[in-house]
Length: 290
Image (cartoon, rainbow, N blue to C red; front, side, top):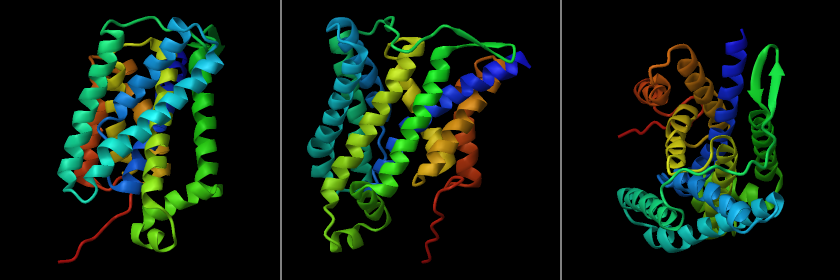
């Protein structure tokens, strides 16, 4: 029972962080039909920029986190303006290849600035052990779950109550109709990429606080793909549910079966979902008639 509780909390932590990263992925896809293969690198940049703010510039973590979000938003807007906007109207394969190249470029920039050696991350979230029903977990994991839940709740309010959020939903449903209503689609694209970069940066900061910073953090972002395929490429609730399912599944498989299966189980799920329900649990089923 103790092991089950510990694995559950670990899985919920990873799942909540995956849901944050997947949220940005889904936003980009819904608003612009772009599959962003650089989402993991956004997470990596967020972790390293916060590391620089805390360790190299010796800033308080609140100021460092705010500046990290500013940098992340700037990176997202720059990518949309300089890389994606010139490709509007080009074949989708060209856009996909551009995001793959972007992921390599961003990773190379991070390696050039900070190197490839893993580094200890100065914890800005308490990490002392907490005992829950006989299981012992780090307080940082509980904080990570709480922060991720709050962020997802705030983003939900943004999408349902704010003018920009409603405009993003309109563009996601029908770009032509949104343009006819006076909504700037290019402006919405910039919003989508900036939010995607910011959510990934928050996820990167939470992961780094638990495991430290290193190039392997970009691999954490790769696990976003099974999440969004499971939940549905165009579904925000699916990103949240998919993140929790994948996080728990990886934790249970790693805890009870081991043998490295937790590293591949999410991709096994991805293959099964593509074979059985390719539009995901909550994705919109599109039927094309010829």
